Length: 479
Image (cartoon, rainbow, N blue to C red; front, side, top):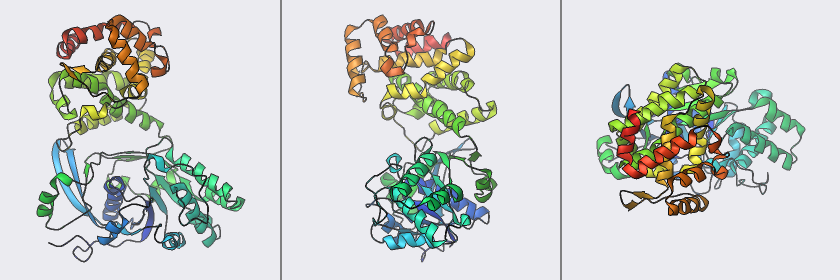
């Protein structure tokens, strides 16, 4: 059986216009797929040169296949469960700067280069004081980027037309702003001069982004079946869900150069990405966090099974549409569409997402993902969000660490686990509720100060512990 490469598959060649830091599953199933779509449907003509950002990586494997790989997209699309695949051909070659730093820097000489895309993990955008311009290469991603930009500045003698559009995909807040700040710090550390610093500021655009697509990655458990179906060997097969969202905070000029909208891709260009970040955190992440203690104590183990259960599914939908969405400022139709997309993602038959895997550090997750919706609901409606407070009661019950007589493998900071262990040792529901809600190290404020909140949570917690989650949820739904 043949292996996938450009001698066995006639992939297209494109002008090298994008430098990409990272060769992992996410970028190949997300950004590179979108570039592939734009190349197919417009005259974008953008080839990708991939830079391996750390010493151990997959660039050699990528080069063995001449940049080609198969992408499977699995999930709910237009209301139907669909699995489809295609060969992605936008990557032209890969570079390992740890083996050939000169080859890496030579890309700065390319007059056609226009974009930098990255995903070097959340820890990738970090300042490394040890980095030096003379290093071959610098240890950190921002260090490598600063050296690359300085090389480009010198080659093109500070030409403002030769700056780059830099679109990081790392999952940190204000990723573009942080990357720019660290890049400028290196320029100062290395005494590269005010002209270079001005060129970074004036000629280059650092975009803040929000990315969203679940990418399970390499389908190790079914690779033999997929290989037989494809008829060729591909060591870089990657799986992703159908849903995708890329929010890019950038000047309007970037949208003119990056024709995602023309291809029908779910890419949002905006001058303020915060409403979209808030939407994702509150609806997607907030729904997950609200669901976990309710669904798990109900006896369900998977996210998809939760949506299939009439009672748990109805509870989650009510929480999303009636208590979370009304606290957000985007147009209602946009919020409803996003919420429905989230529910389709939860129903994805190709993904099995365990509730326990989402339960890690549930207290801090509840604080950042759910509590803001509770407080904003109270602020806007002057009433209590009953479903989200039921979830809070379920969270306290979850940290009792017991489901139907079996222990729950709780995973959280020792401070959290020790607190709940001491609380549940007393067995007094009233004091457990009060002490939990008053714990400002959990919530950043004393939740007992909100009128009626303590009483609602205590009543729900007592119902869950006394009668069990199934009966409690049924009773709650009738109220």
